[in-house]
Amino acid sequence: MTETQDRQSRLQGFPDILPTICEALDRAAALRPSTEALVGNGERITFERLRSESLKVARALIASGMGHGDHVAICAGNSVEWAILFHGIVRIGAVCVPVNTRLTPGEIRMQLERADARLLITVESLLKIDFVAVLREVCPAVDDTLPSTDLPHLTDVVVISETAPAACRTFADFLTAGENAELPAPPEPDDVALIQFTSGSTSFPKAVLLTHANMATDAYFLGMRMGAGEGDRYLSARPFFHVAGSTLAVVLSAVHAITLVTMHRFSGEEALKLIREERCTLTSGNDTMYLMMLGSPDFKPLSYTLRGGWAAISPAIMRRTVEEFGATRTVTGYGLSEASPNIMASDHGDPVEDRIGGWMRPHPGLDVRICDPTTGAEVARGQKGEIRVRGWCVMKGYYRDEAATRETMTTDGFLKTGDMGVMREDGRVTFVGRLKEIIRVGGENVAPADVEDVLIGHPKIRQAQVFALPDPRLIEVPGAYVVPREGETVTADEVLAWAKPRLAGFKLPKYLAVIDSFDVVGLTASSKVPKRLLIEHAMRHFGLEEKETAS
Image 1 (tube, rainbow, N blue to C red):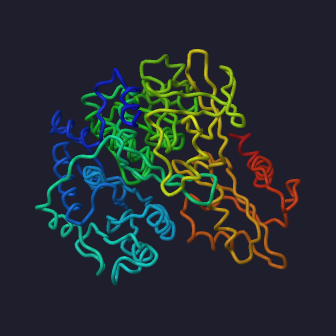
Image 2 (image 1 turned 180 degrees about the horizontal axis):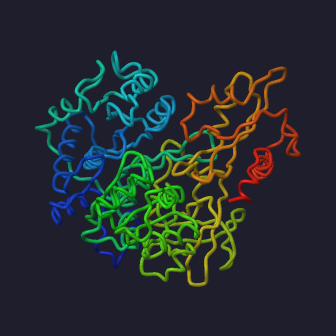
């Protein structure tokens, strides 16, 4: 059975699912041409215009030599232009590579290199950051001739600006060159649409391959669980360079032909303002986002148009969302990048206490099991185990990393999520914790190994351990212990000052201490240090136990 046949067999009975992202946008433009597709940062665009502008990008890409399967990177914030570029890229069967704008130049270069990006489209500036200057750090050859030895696949760079470095083009010139180009045959459902970078337990971010079918189907089912329909206005500040932004905001908006409202950077005050001014009915967020809104001095209980949306939040914050926001139809969602990303969600019609408690149903056509993470055997209902999933949402694999793909997938096709859950007798599942050691800083995932590799690069540092510590606003932040090389002396401030230009802001440890050895946590310096013991020691060391008790 082919992938397409397998998908079709699993989704029988759901005729509204559109097999590609392009078909979703085409239908939205035909069904609701004058409905606003996206509102944000002072810009507005209808579905009809979003489609027409994305076709211009598609033609320009063809004229640039891009085609089916080629990798095209976007370095831009949440905006109308990001959506136009994305839809243009996937229209020709090319693969979109969203670049995290919060990364350092070195990290951006790594993403472009690992993704084999052939063309990069970047903004001139974003949130007071000069991205042309960043571009010059990423690839100095933009002032001379492309490609460079560091990025041998990158042959074309387009800057959304009136001017561009010598080896680049402006966006206007890019579009003009494609005015007479002919579009190719549309992509197939199982064609890859997105390369999504995700942090894991190794020092290298993995490049997840997601198809049109992965993303369009996932957007369809989560939208159904939220009750999305005509007239809805959906606020999502999830970064479009994350899969929760691309699939569950940009694609979901097209699949359900509803208005997406967004912003460059989330703040509680701006979110409340947009909800009120744009009369948003749906939203999405994590613990940090909801706490920032609920804790804002601008927050006025039970005075908003929100009725629901989806949230990846704890029961306590979900209760506040229902009771203080009045968003009584909010659902809980769970997933990960490798699963497009949403595996399961509660339904807007479920009993409110089930939704507050985080009890979710797997989406139709998916096989979700709770397994012993060591043996792989399915555990009894009510017992904790690793959440594993098989079906249409699972990635094609990791790009250029067959070994990691084999490690993440079982021989019978299940994705090992690395997360723990419990399944009730009725088949509903709740998320209870993580096997992985990912630190979730607000909406960003940080792999401890990524930060450790940077810290160990300091000439005076011999060892480093990074772990999650609690934070009242961001939920988790990185903490670190470092051990100096023999005979060297270094202070925490020196280490942080050295690391700051080498790490994205959300990866920089909020708490860091220099110690003589890891004997302080009961281990020899050569031992593998369990994060649990480090966290317990750090909670005492940094006085966080008292803060936790006080809160």
